Figure 1: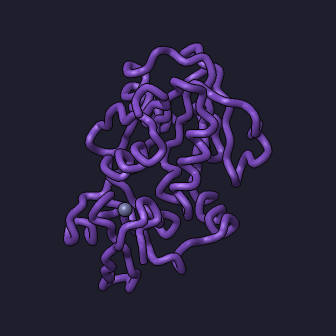
Figure 2: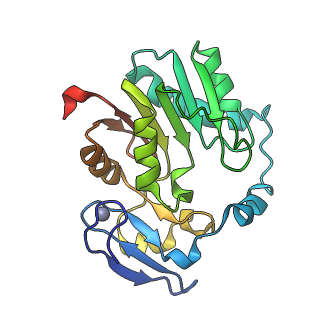
Length: 216
Ligand SMILES: [Zn+2]
C-alpha cells in the first residue's frame, strides 16, 4: 500500500499481540493501521463518552495550557481562531478567548453544526485529533484552505518513536480510535506539499506551521 501522506511505497509490519497490520513510510515517517481497523463516528463516540472531560478540571486546563505555552510565544497575536475537533468541551476556545483571541470551535461528533464554511482564520488549533483521522492529508489541506494568508496552524498529536520495537511497546496506538501516527517529519513533508512554512515542533507532540506565500 502506498503512503496516504506522500504516496511513496510503504513497508508493512504486524503487531504480534493484537495481530494488527501497520504500514510505515520511511520517507515521511507516517504510520497507519490497516484500514479495516478504522471505525465510524458512532463507534468512536461510544468510546469518547467513557472519558469525562470536566471543563473545570484543573488537569485538563494545565494540559491545554502546555499547548498554548508552546504556540503562543511563536505567533504574532491572531484575532480569530478555530479549535478543530474540540471534543465535547469548548475549554481550549475559552482559554484562547482569555488571551483576547476570538475562537470558534467545531467537532464532527459533539458540535457538528458550528462550522462556517466561508470563514477564514488567523489561527487554527487541533489537539489530539489527527491520530483519529482516516484521511489526515485531506483534513490538513482543508485546514490550510481555512487559514488566512499568514495564518498559523498548531497541532498536537504524540510523535511516534520511529523505531520498530519501541513503536510496538508504545501505548498510544493501543487506543482503537488512534489509527494514524506522525512525527515532526510527517508534518514537514505535508508543509512542503501544500507550500506552507514549518515553524517548529517541541520534539514530542506539538507542531506549528504558517501559511505564507513567501515561504514557498
Ligand atoms: Zn509517506
